[in-house]
Amino acid sequence: MHKWMKLPFLAVLTVLILLLSAGCGSNSASPNKAPSVSAEGSNVANNSPTSVEDKSKPAEQVELLVSAAASLTESLDQIKSVYEAEHSHVKLTFNYAASGTLQQQIEQGAPADLFLSAGTKQMNALIEKGLMDDRLTTNLLTNELVLVVPQDGSVQIEKMEDLAKLGDIAIGTPESVPAGKYAQQTLNYHKLWDSLQSKLVLTKDVKQVLSYVETGNVDAGFVYKTDAALSDKVKVALSAEAESHEPIEYPIGVLKDSGHPDEAKALYDFLLSDPARQVFSTYGFTPAE
Image (cartoon, rainbow, N blue to C red; front, side, top):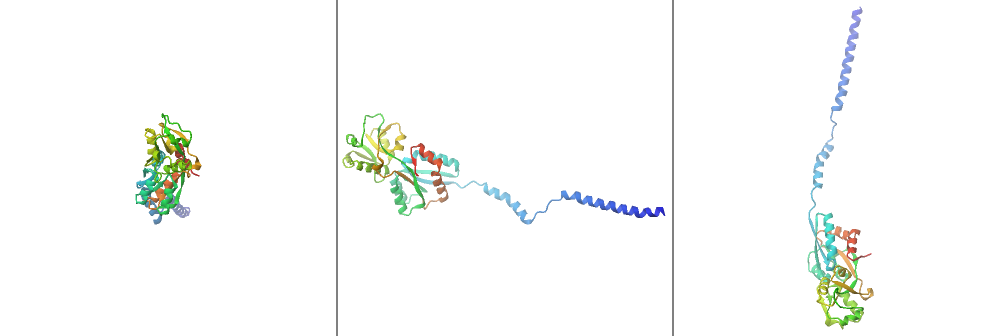
């Protein structure tokens, strides 16, 4: 009787042991089981490397053509170095000349992305012809007109009327060179334009005026204050009164048919930014309000 009762007990114990073993086996397998991934999640994972690869592709190289007044040469050359260092995919190419010459080139179809003029007349002419994006056109800088003489010369000027005592006097051609137009207005203001006609030497741009004075080919010349500051071979004899000529303003604008409108706008915005304004100020320009 005692021996018979042990059999059910052993059977029950055996069943319990088997059940416990099965439970432990299931739990131990769970941590090693990989989580399921949906088809959608699988596609995202597979596409990730492609997205990263696309973003790592170098930007397409872009060349921006900028037609700019000759008096901006030094300041824009410095800005070119700064801008290209920060925008490695952009190359800036400058076409420096008298603003009137640049205006005519653009009217005749010469390629350009931006135009920087030393006078509002030239910019307004292009706006009226529908060649500029008038949403991206504004005054960038202001300047002053001065009369310079050779640094080591004996020319003495105390007032504009003293110009009558001099020999040749260089000015930019008024029809195409804004500095020449301002000089003409100043001489008219002092009633000297007609009487000085035989002494006037007309040049292609303001840089040529400066060169003629530096080399002693003329006794004096009208240039911008910023040009005079760049030379140790000339000195300022007189400053033209502000009321003697139209305001000297440098407008900037993006052309409507720019081949790279996004990059052109980015450069336009940069030239109006504080870093660029600081460079212009270093060369004697006054940023426009």
